[in-house]
Image 1 (cartoon, rainbow, N blue to C red):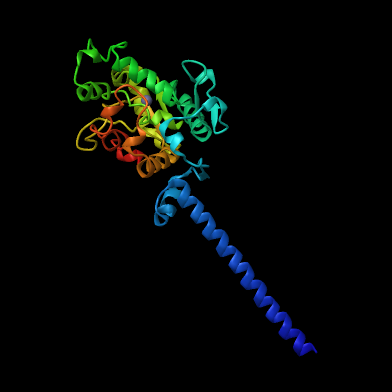
Image 2: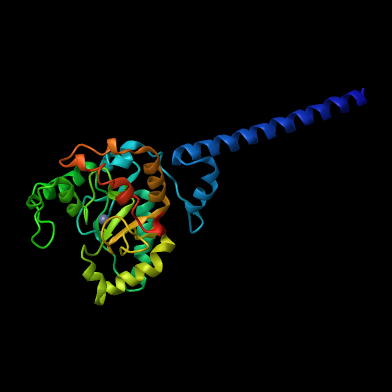
Length: 284
Ligand SMILES: [Zn+2]
């Protein structure tokens, strides 16, 4: 009897071990599959991407990225993934950021303050329609581009779009749609080149990276041949933004960039290749 009992219990034990191993494998595979789907990249890159989503030992929760999110068809005020930015840290009320990006900003702001540097958010999440107003005001000559250049003085649509694109994104292609990007302190590079602004910029260059922030629009040149002019004020929360960028590359095509005056120029100007992807290596 005891011999048979041992035989049954060891068989039983082997069966249980096999079951546990099978369940563990299932969990691992399904998690890997979900992660690979969520960020729209090949499974063999999943492990490396997961690393980039670790900041100071904390895992950054990622949203399930949809086409609407990438194109800015969002409503931050009614989306639990976003948080209202406290007016204390902003130039006006009613601005939003994705929660993880906002909390990273708060940590960075507090560290900056300890070093005597103050960071103020001038612009954060901008949905498609907001970006459409900015674009169309320029396109239709309601707003001067720079100096005394008015877009309606430029009859050729491609030339007109190119001039606006020096500093403004086409609706559907702005990183401000993603809830991860902010403009800080001043919208003039000159502010960051002397006195107080220079101190702010140097602090950001030295420390922003450790809070997950990078500057996508650095000086144009060999390092960055395409895209917008330099923007020393624009900072991006890389752990989430890089996932949006990869998803954008995978699922957005030129046919998706539409719904505004001048949208017919998007494809000819290759705005995805030259502008969405025309960022500093540090932000990829
Ligand atoms: Zn910006």
